[in-house]
Length: 248
Image (cartoon, rainbow, N blue to C red; front, side, top):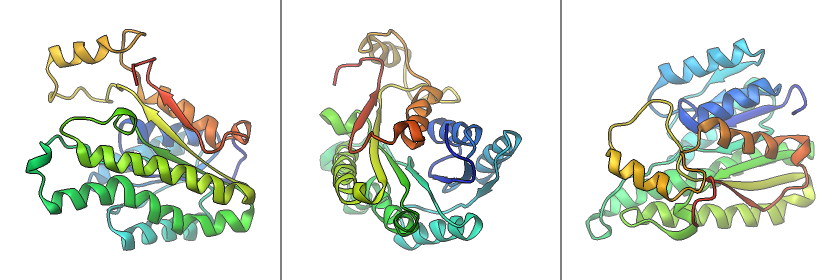
């Protein structure tokens, strides 16, 4: 799908959707920059898999909630490959906590990772995209950005902000050959079963999906692969919902 020699930077790429995006783009001929904040072993495993697919891959660990770290991550990617042609802002925090119990520090932390990181990474990667006259930015929103989520107020606020950022960047940088889009995943099954949801809760989640099942990271990654490909060149400023038809 994608032309060879292009480079993609994927945040939160050690597992789930980020991992699937990294491996999908590696299969499409991209060099991939694997970012994670804590589990370096998982990120290195993804890089190893990407190399088996014929891609060049590096791991750049760092906290995307820190503006200086965002710049360092992008700078290391550009130093290694000359540019970041596709930026996938996937990393996010999604804690559940009642609104009246959230501390200022917790609020700021969630906003910094779920919204601000997309801002600072775009600012760090856009100059080389503008210079080349070609680029792709894919932001991840989710159903929190569509109808809100009780207990996840800062996440909903941040993801609404990401949608606004997506539309604004699409307008400003579209004339320079750079598309910016968002993907809104619905209920997605993780790579490894997580024990923080009861069987009843999972059944209720699946019950809201007309297809009668949860999606997979690979199915979300398929949308990302389209958006960064030449075939997706006329898609700009859009939010693609990959949710099995779940009520939004």
